[in-house]
Length: 194
Image 1 (spheres, one colour):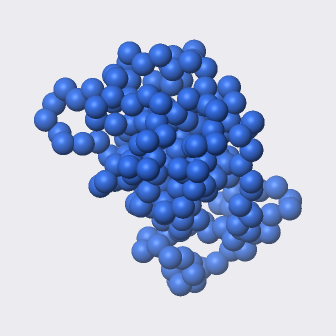
Image 2: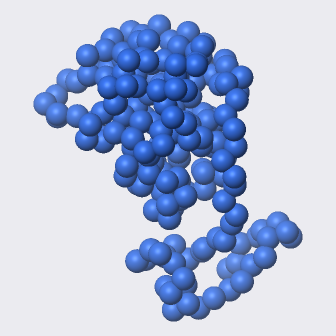
């Protein structure tokens, strides 16, 4: 059964063998979209006021990036800011992992040290030696920095963090996946704001 789509969207039905040839995935989902990649919109600092925004420093895994975008969408976050060395958000694996959320969340690219230096909003950083996420006084706005899967937040960006925050460890695991950490931060920020 074909999906009901708006009239301005062209729909072409193809055979499975054809879909296998044009998809970059080993097991295509059954649908493929051809869309224009939007031009990188300029980030206006005013758009970040009175809300929380995720800032990703060096996230490399496309699945993690897609999951973070999808999580941000779930919790109502409108914007994500990525460092220039993050994985490309239009990487096919990232796009698939967003499950459509990439169409609803604005993703910006910025030179983080420079961007954070010019910023007037509080900067929180996910670090192991920070205050507990459950005791942090968040206020009404902020940038929440999450780091690379293996290296964490870069030293240049750590210098720009106003308030280190940690997710308390109860067990013995060495670390948390960055997408899992983003989910916990998003959930807690929504909880305290409501």
